[in-house]
Image (cartoon, rainbow, N blue to C red; front, top):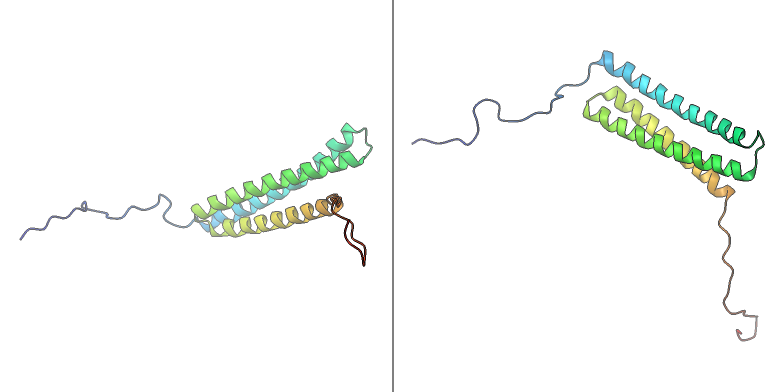
Length: 144
């Protein structure tokens, strides 16, 4: 009896283009370089956003300029966090374990910095209380 196979001859399983792990001699320096670059971008944005804020107000700090600086800093940190997450995914796809660990560390640090900055901004700007417009009730009497 003859059996026909539907599988082609040769390799039967497709594999990713990047089959093996990244070489250690490339992975570690590249991961360190990316982490240092992300830290430098974060410090750069903090310094130059502050200098830009001071320059536009003739080196006088006002409440509105400080709020604008805080919101711009939050937006920059959020974008940098998203960029670090994208690089983390790329490190995982490239099977670079040390770069992945260093990028996960950078993502956790940026996430902590972003949540602390957001918490600080929220505490400095509490929501205004909503005025009560319901009936006034006194003890022992009816609500009017």
